Image (cartoon, rainbow, N blue to C red; front, top):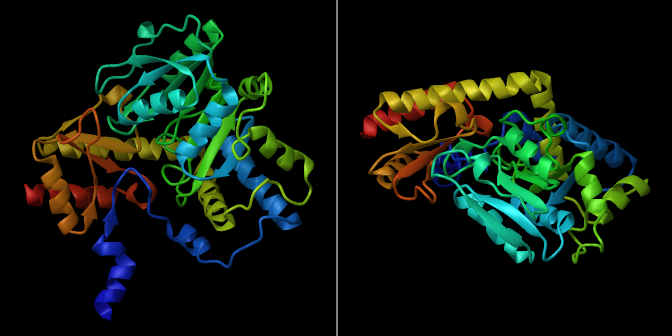
Length: 365
């Protein structure tokens, strides 16, 4: 009985410390929120709470309009592709690694002519290599989780706007951990999710638009061929309905958890919050270097929420750590089998946990 209780408290399967790039483990305050009774997804009280969440998201991201959709971050990418582009249009897509490759697949699934832009593994994309002639859009990951590389969104925005292309950014592994100000950076559309840097539970996709992105959505020649992911439908419910602000039943508990986490971020302050995660990232990378590991991405372009390190026995190291109750993530293409990934999201964005991880790695080695 005691062993069973300990397993529940420490996590499924005896995982005491979850240090993967997502989903994150919840702060105790959000964990308490998750245990509350279910609230309805309509009515005056919910209307006010829902509006507050969107206000906090817009403030955090520098967005002019935000949408919360039940589903994963990939559902948000689907929604963004549906609403920004029409079949047959050409988009340049940066293939930055595992998740950059997914962007190519999503674009092609929507009938888009995807012009693939390659980049050196572990390096940020070179804007000079991007040809936007004839392109309606540029699509890129802000942070490629497979490589821990942060791509130069400001420069890509300048390039896109000079060509009249809309910039869509996959910020699933960046929001809540990197500096993001959509208006100031020139980002037209951005997608994220609740379970990483935003500190919430999995199950919510975030689609954020600047005014220019909203204009692009409104300029479609026809409504997108989807009911559920048509942002105009969500816009109508949010602005025209004074009782139910969404067209579908919403996972209210997940939204309340996200609302609590966003309030904690804003209490600390957006810039301070990002600076804290940048400091933790440096400490983790420096600690791994001291143990003899190579880390992917140079310091200038290293992401704050994930650290990728090389080791010839990377998969074995992941297994040995799991035996000790610590879960990190294995490598993904283009570094599958030769790297492991450490997530600094949720409760793992913690100096003591980083020190514990480094100690366990040293012990195993």
